[in-house]
Image (cartoon, rainbow over all chains, first blue to last red; front, side, top):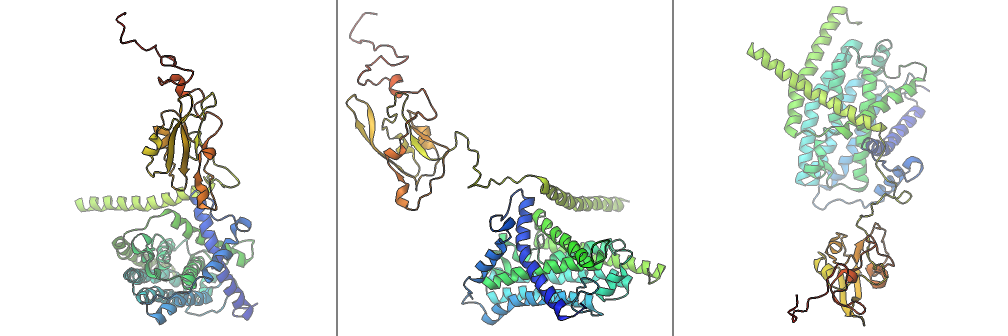
Length: 318
Length: 188
């Protein structure tokens, strides 16, 4: 086993897609637990086969394209989020010898691809030729543009401390001290930005169902809708994996093997995403924008300046 | 200095908002350890109170006779007009419904018929499992509605307390009823 071996690539791809599928069940069960319900528990052990049933249902649905839609773009849009999210996973260093590829600009690659994923929403909303879809797309693009700014800025503190964009080196640099300690502000900003990037509640305004029907994927059904859904879940997994990588020491941890530590930490963050969906209400759109530009951006800049001052004072090997 | 105080007040307000988010998260997380309210229905039956508004029945009085006097009040009050009946009279002068039909595919189980009934004849029961494969089977005739017991009111017998005379009970012979006054007599 070495980084980039075909076995590694196959296993990681399979694991990510399987995670995205199982997350459908995990989310429904966890939300149910937190709302004093049971959730799907009939099909198979603990209701796990519900995932298979949902998949069969969604795959066997009619693959319908509305007559008023821009057909080519309409079909293309859902693939964008799947492709960008899956390719972004390539740079995630899962364990010392597990990973797909190591770039010395891995972090930038992640930021670039997570920004590209917004094309999925924009193209879907545009191609649907439906005003609610277009509103959703508009919101998705504005939200991603705003939150992308300080998402990038929030991780610059980590880059300064580690002195590199290479995610594997960043993890190795956290051998003794996880970056959550010196970068807690950066983590808070990054977490909120990641939440907004993956269009999860409370930042799910692009698909706010009480005002926009379903936002950019109003006109979608069947497998194309399923791809949006799976793409969103892969996005959650990716964001959680990045938080673990950048701030929570990646695979580092006592006793258990590195892969287990990485998976455990990622699972905790995925569950935190679901908990937030189960508890926080959605803000108004102008509140969302004001929060992004007036609170999060200054916070990210303050974090950047403080980290810079710290690094200058102590020396770059801090 | 006023500006500083204002900033401090705003800061406290923002801090309150932030803390409230965390408090919300903590509260919801606490629900991990509370029991689910779900009743796993087909295996586990929900507890229904005796006054639950389910399937409608027609009851009998303690003597085993039909309580219904075919007054039509239930049919009139029914908001979806799902009750149909026809009055008949037996040899004793008692009124009874010749047929009594409730269309349960229309019935909304509102209980207004039970409230309107002057003789406690029509009553709702804690039974809701009335699914049928054929819609026509949802129409219940009198033989399906009539039960053998008095339902929720064990002692009530309309003809024993009402002033109407029937065979075997003349005017003035009901419970708490004085004999009728002879209006042609001048005696006190």
